[in-house]
Every structure is written in structure tokens, then in C-alpha cells.
Amino acid sequence: MTILGVALLALCTLVGVFLGDLLGILLNVKANVGGVGIAMMLLIAARIWLVRHDRLGHATKLGVEFWASMYIPIVVAMAAQQNVVAAVSGGPIVIIAAVGSVLLCFAATALLGRIGRRPAQDSADIEHAGAVIAGDAEAPSPMQPTTTIRR
Image 1 (tube, rainbow, N blue to C red):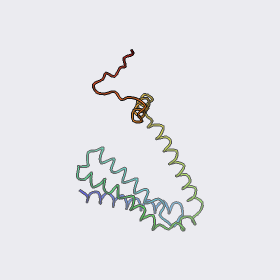
Image 2: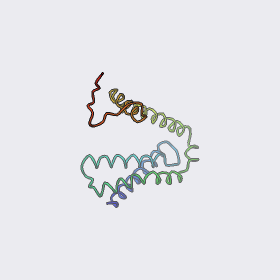
Image 3: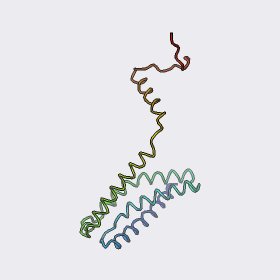
Image 4: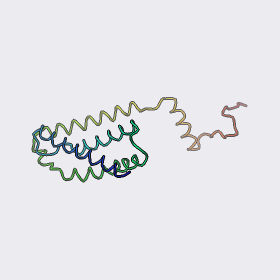
């Protein structure tokens, strides 16, 4: 049901904006600091939790996935309303937080890239498939045995 996806999105947005305002107060910045991003992470976490605990029916899952995919344009629209000038005038902590978050994202991307590598044995198959596609090698036909016979 799409309505449950809307309800989950609204709840995550409200909690995220509240936490962003609270973070702004703690950092002595007169702006919402990361509320939209927090809401997006809450939506992702809530969806994963619901799937793992089998609380998401098929129709509800479709509604949640629809609103999760629609969230990016909503994030852009909401972020356009934030007062960036007030946040930057709050002090250097905003610049430090921005640079730190970008560096953290780069590190996480590198870590995930290293963890997600395929084993070396797959690379030989991939190279052979590339050679077959390029026409440099013959593909074994279903009628031929895969072993080669030397004459």
C-alpha cells in the first residue's frame, strides 16, 4: 500500500528534521544541520528493518520502495529551502563537518570496493568471455565437448 510508504516517509522526515534542528542548536548554528540526510538514512534503515522482520507485505513493500525512490527529488527540494548562509556564518564547524563527511564517504566507498571484489578465478572466465565477444576466441558450442583435442 502506497499510503504506508507515505506514512513511513513522513515519520522519517519529521524525526530527521527534528534531529537536524537539535544538531543545529547543539552546534550553535541557526539552521537545520543535516536533517534531510538524517531522514533519508532513517528511511533506509526502517525499510531494511521491516524487510528483515517480515513486516513488509508485497503491496506495502512496493509503496515503500516507490517513496524511497521518490525521496531524492524531495531531498533536493527540501535542501533548497535551507538557509546555507546562516549555517556557514555559524562558524568553521560547518566546513569541518562537510570536509569530514566527504572524506568519510570516500573512505567508505574504498572499503566497500575492496570488500566487494570478485575472486581471481572469475577474472579468467571474464577475459575468455570478452575474447569470445570480440571474435578472438571460439565459443564452445553445446554439441562440442569443452576439452580440446590436439591433432
